[in-house]
Amino acid sequence: MSQTTKRALENSLKNIMLQKPFNKITISDITEDCGISRMTFYYHFKDIYDLVEWACMEDAQKALEGNKTYDTWQKGFLNIFQEVKENKAFIFNVYRSVSREQVEQYLYKVVYDLLIDVVEEKAADMSVIDEDKAFIANFYKFSFVGIMLEWIKDGMKKDPQEIIDRMEPLLQGTFIHALNSYRTDPNKTKRSK
Image (tube, rainbow, N blue to C red):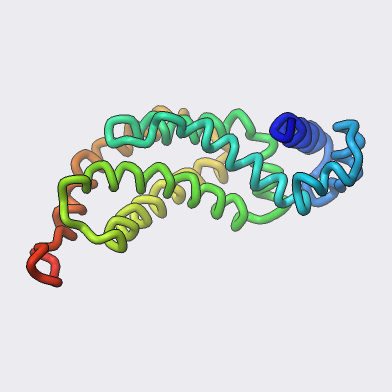
């Protein structure tokens, strides 16, 4: 029942965002549209920002489901693009009304979750410390999110598949190359060159 109520609140927020800017929406607007009490809203979320964050993370988890491997990262990233595009009005409203920073933080979290799984998979038989694996995932994360933010800023006009197709040759084998560069010799504390 809890997930059902949360989804209903998310749907109400998204419906209202089609009519008014995010910064003009109140909890009363959402609860009225949803047909629940304010107390029920506060049982699930501390404020509207908390609802937005939950909605974004739920959509992201759905987009990445089963697509967090080296062979499927392109599909996972494409699904993120498509999820953002399906929620275009919502994303634009948050991006323009709240702040670019909140959209960035959401994208950084989602893309990192995708990439760290890819890095971990490729590092399975390598001696690479967790800090270095996180550094590699973060390096790629900033590139991916930068491309996506540019796409959002430009009105989401380009076909996401075209973007993924252009990225793929740049990334072919780079995860493995990066991990090899950070490989450690178990008998020494320094990285091998």
